[in-house]
Every structure is written in C-alpha cells, then in structure tokens.
Image (cartoon, rainbow, N blue to C red; front, top):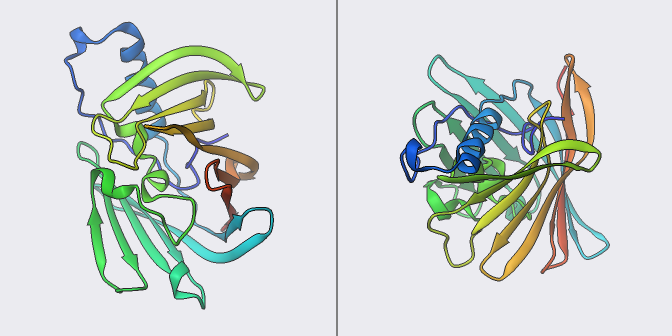
Length: 240
C-alpha cells in the first residue's frame, strides 16, 4: 500500500532539523529516517477521479478532478484540478517538490481566479471546499522538524512504524501534531490522525487499493472530521 498520499504526492526533501544529529534521541533519529523514506516515494501515474463530500450521512457533492504529475530534471509537481458548475468547488493546486528546499504550494480559487503561494500554516486551508486541506495533499506533516518513532506495532493487519510528527509553530486552527502508522515493508501510510490544541479531530484512511503498472496505488482515500461530522473521499481512476 502506498503512503497516505502516494496517490497524490511524496517528496525527496531533507528536513531542517531543530537540533543537530548528536542532540537527537534514538527515537527521533529513527523518526526522521522513516519520514525521509516516505517522502522519497513518488507518484508517477496520472489519475482522474471524483471528490465525494459528505455532510452528515447524505452525499453533499461529487466533484470531478484531474491529477497530473510533471517531472523535470530538478523537481516534480502534482497538479490537482477540479471542475464543477458550482464555482465554490472549483480550484487548482500545484505542489512542487524540489530536493533540498521546502514544498511550494500554488493555489488558484475560482472566486478570484488569482494564484496564491502558500507557506507554513497558510497551507491549512480547504481545497475545493472539501475536508482535505492543502497541507494534507502535500503530506506536509512529514516535513516538520519534529519526527519521533513511538513504537512498532501491528495496525489494521499491517506491521507498522507508529510515527509522531509535531508542528513547531502551529496556527490557531492548524495541526499541532500528526500520528501516523506506516507500513514497514512498503512505506505506505496505513492510517493517520491529526490533532490540534483541542485534541484529535481528523482521521485519514486509505480504504481501497488497486494494482497499477505492477504497483499498488491507493484507489480511495477517506478523511473524516470528527467535530463537524463531515468526510471527504478521494476516488482515483489511474490512467493506464
């Protein structure tokens, strides 16, 4: 199983550590190693799909989207573009990954048709009015300087690293930390929980996979907001 957004993105960026290597504990060193390995996974397949938004039990909206991957000699990008007759659901996001630098996020909304470059906690904003934030689609938590291996355990029938990622400067409504279970054999994210200052409030789970060009890719990825009782499911159809 690929990592949480292997369907979407993963990067080869080396994190800026908050302490030098000899000041980190063994669990922190392992945490950074695991986060780096997951970031180095790349999605190479393009995909089409549906963004299904639920508010309570009924389906609230189905938004078509296109995922395009573009690689150059120096970086690679994942481009999400939605289409809808409701302009509130129309958006385009480009996540560019360049080794040795931070991710670059370019978000274009239908309301202004202007492109904004988002950094830090600015990325904790909804994409196309869904439960997915820009930071989620960029797997931003794996780039935070605080990474710590909590334990190794079986989770959802997979042998996993349990990783804690902490945000050094969380915003008022942003994530303070993320707990993720990462498949030891594949580097795929089996589940992740996002916490803010009030506690746990988002849960990410890949709920279906498919084999694409000899590799398993996430076919459905669900995010649930336990406070608003909403959820969004990304359903992917990979181009062959």
